[in-house]
Length: 467
Image (cartoon, rainbow, N blue to C red; front, side, top):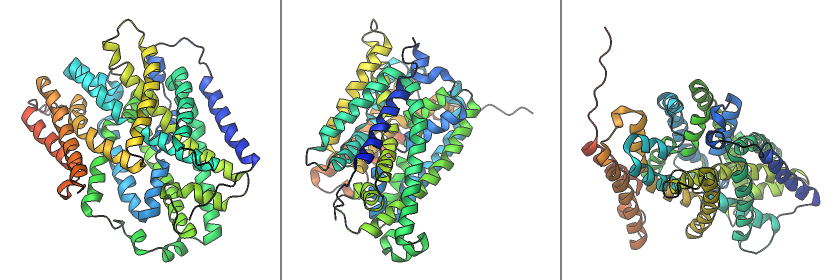
């Protein structure tokens, strides 16, 4: 089933108004002359509300991927996209938040450079640049606007247009622009999904009624997947520890306490939003039946249920959810490529100018990547499986001495796990038996990472407690 978009002039006016508001919020104070710490971290003075708003909205950009999964596999979404990330986020707040805020580094590559040397910093910059690829979010925006327009034109045309819009305001306004727009986008994303759940309940009955009508696979905690598949997502949630958006926001917090409390509050916000998105996906399955693109279950359901005006408002909620992450990842990509990598080779060019050029380059690379993997979940899975194993232990070693490795071993610690995961992924594609030998590529990468750490770890002695 395909639910054709039925938009009125009022819906389009609301969507146009969203872009106007985002532009206005972005360009506030853009004429100020800013230094590097102001441009990259808002002067390291994020308040608790600003911290929570920007972290919550940024972490939830893959909204269509969440819809795709919940529509197909039901409540197992909690085990794949929910619980693992709550757990590791809380561990992050407990173990790392204070240390990152007190560290002088502005970014992950800079932190690795300070600890292990310039070569580690440059290599990690390339890894992080790929890790924060905006490709999944450009893909979702392209699909969304293709649907809204009702056109058969390639979704890439729409994706490029919206990506360039984000590139423009992020490159001019810096991190301040990201934070200001995140406040507005956070409000819109919650409002849109609260309304979608309310209208779904009115149409099909309450959650208890819905539960009785769902097939077994949607009520299963595994969603029909193997235990290995579920467990690998727990390991992929280790992404949290190497996520540059987490690191950037913690580094930008006014105090370590704000960073720590902000993460805890963000987990509560994610739990609420997960409840809304899961219910929306389940209602979408029940109300719409079979649809041609599970990725589009939320837009289809909203178009089916909402009257004129509310349709436009809900699509603004989707745009806000996706673009809040897109602009953050574009900015991080530009910072990583421009300041942490290219600045070493072009020292005469101001770093802020290099960052602005690199933001555009990141958008173009994202478009190329989504052409290779035109699936949101596949993009997350491939990028996470390959990049996380190589970054995890070196970064933990910066802040936790027990994980520290010798400086002359750090490149091997980064390269070997990444190659192991990449080779395993290629073998699966080449032999058409993905995952190869029934083992997900993240596992060989993580195994090599642990073995490499054991070979190259730096002797660590805990301080004796005072008596």
